[in-house]
Amino acid sequence: MKNDVQKEIDAFRKLALADLDTLSDAELMAEIAADGGNPQEMSDQIAARLDDVVSQFLRYRTAEAKVQANSKKPEAAIWRPAMERIKQLIEQAFAADPKLATAFRDGKRQSDSDLQTLYDDLVDMGKINPDHDPR
Image (tube, rainbow, N blue to C red; front, side):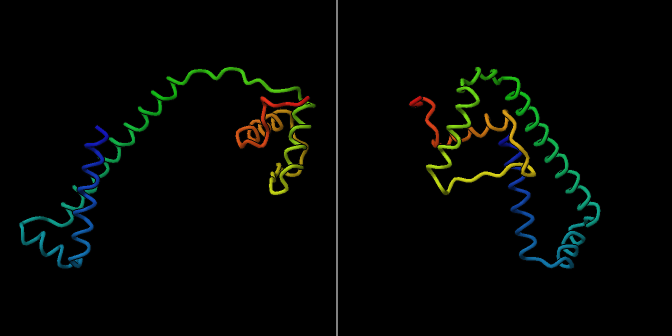
């Protein structure tokens, strides 16, 4: 279904761009009228069809997101050192890399949750090695 919708969108885009590149508005309206069509009616039909295609695509994306959300397994509990050790490791990471920087909301004190998230981010960045804690 996704490929069909994408193909139709691509086809509309190519046709629209080709017409826009080669015809003025007056020429395009005259061409439609010469073919026995009503330019406003044709415009309304194209707009309605585009709305249908976009709606189909959005419904498809929403359904896909729901399937993915429902299929996610709960994450296993993440092991972290004690909070005092987390603070030390964060301090060491920042001391070891002067280019490393972070900002906190309104200069407020960081919560334990903030520090745990920062620890996780530094582990992900390779600035802290959780398997090599010399302590």
